[in-house]
Figure 1 (cartoon, rainbow over the protein chains, first blue to last red):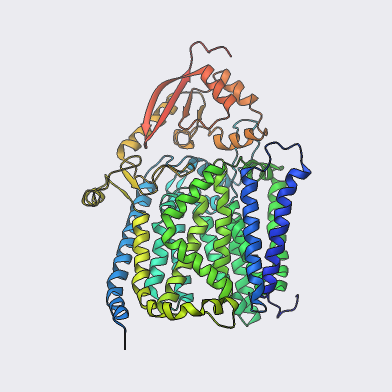
Figure 2 (figure 1 turned 135 degrees about the horizontal axis):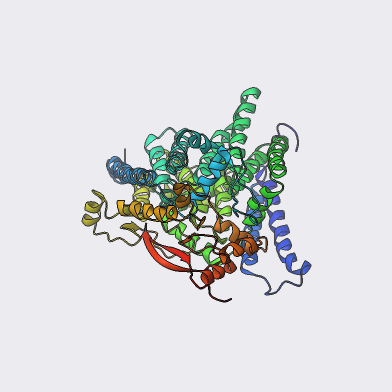
Length: 71
Length: 544
C-alpha cells in the first residue's frame, strides 16, 4: 500500500466506504449511549448523519463488485 | 450519412450555444454593475462588512483582531486573517474604506470563473464555448452574484480552493519528480491559503487529500504530514500570540446552534436555482465513480455539498454553498464537453457496463440531440437564476419588456425569492438617497462627544470614533456562555454612549434589555431598505 505504484482499486475504495459508513452509523448512535443524560432521543442532525452514513455504506457496497479497476 | 435528428441538432447547435452565451453574458454585466455600485457605496451594505474592514485596519497596524471581548472595546473577529492581510496595504495607501475589499471580492469571483473555464477547456477537449459557459454560469449564480462583490472573505476562499483543485487535478500524471513536487507544493499552498481565509475550506482540504490518497496513499500521507505541520505551526503561533483568543474567537465561538429547517430550506433553494447544472454534474460524478477514475473535481463537489450542510448553523447562509456551486459549474462543463464529443464509454468488462448494454442501441441514436440539450441546459439555468435590478437605467426597460416586478428590497428581482431562512437579503443596487442617509447618521455620530455603540462599523469609522463591539461575535460567545456582558451593560446603564445605532438588534438579550431600559428610539433613518434605529439616553432610565 505504501509503494510508489500502489493505487486504490474500486473494490478497496468500496470496502473503505462501507467500513466508514458502518462505523459512522455506530458512532452516531453511540452518542446517545455514551451520554444518556441527553434528552430528546435521536435529533434531526443525528438523523441526517445516520442517513449519510447509510448512503456511504451503500455506495461502498456497489463499488465492491467492480474489482481491481483503479478508483 | 447523418440521421435527420442529428442533422437538425447540428443546425440548431450554434444558434442555441450563442443564445446561452449571450444570456449568461447579461449576468456578467449585472455582476459588474452591482460590483461598481457597491464599490462607490461608503457604508456597510451587508451586515458585518464593516467589521471585516476593522480587522483589515488592525492588521495594517500589525495587531491581531482576536481580542478579549469582555473588556472595552468589546471587539473581536471570528475569521482567519489572510483576506484582511491581503487588503491591509490598501489601508496604508488609502485609509479605511470599503471599496478595495469589495473590489478584491469581485475580482476573486472573476478569477474563480476563469479558473473554472480553464479547467473545463483543459479537461473537456478544448471546447471554448462550453468553457466560457461554465465560467459564466458561476458568476450568474444568485448566491455568487450577491456574495462576491462584498467586503467579505468568502469568495477569496472559493478562489483559493478552485485554484488548488485546478492546479492539483493532473499532479499524479506528472512524471518529472521536480515538476510534480512544485505543482504539489503550489496546490497545497492554495489549500492552506483558503483555510487561512475562511474555516470552511476544510472541505477542499479533505477533498484534496482523499484524491491524493486514492491515487497514491504514500504521497498523500507524506505531503499530508508536511501540510499539517505547516498549517499547525501557523495555528499555534497565532494562538500563542493572541493568548488563546485565536482559538476562542475563531473556533470555539463558531460552534453555533444547528437549525435543520434552515439547512433543508437552503438545500431546496440551491437545487431549484442550480438544478439544471447539478443533475449533469451528479451524473458525471456517478460516471467517474463506476466507469472511469475519480477526478479531484468529483471528490471536491461531494465535499462541497457536505460542507454546505453547515449552512444550517445560526449565522450561516447561502454563501456556504459557494464551493459546491464552483464545483458543479466545473463538472457540468465536463459533462457537456463529453456529451458533445460523444465520449461516454461503458466498457463491458465492467459489471454495470454489461447491465447498461441493452440500452446502448436505444441511446446511441439519441446522442445527436446532446447538441441541442446541452445549450438548452444552460438556457434553462439562465432562466432559473434570473436576477436583475428593476429600477436602474436600461435594466428597468428589460424588466418592463419581460414584465418582471421587483420582489426584493429597493427595486430588485431575485428568482430565489425571500423565503429560505439564511438567504442573504441583498443584491439590490444602492441609491444616492442611501448614501445621503448614511452621511446623516455619520453627522449624528459626530455631533456627540461621547463614544457611540453601533451595530455597523462604518458610521464610527467615518466619524473618527472607536468601533465598539462586534455584535454577532459577542452573541456567538454569549450563546455558549463565553461572554461576560457586565462591563458593556455597566457602560449602557451609565449612559456612557452618546448614541446607540441598531439595525438587526444582534446583541445578546441582556445587552438589548439594558439598552431598552437606558435608551429610547428618537429617530429612525431608512437606508438601503433597512430601518436604522437611533437610540439616545433616556432622561429617566426605566427600572429593571
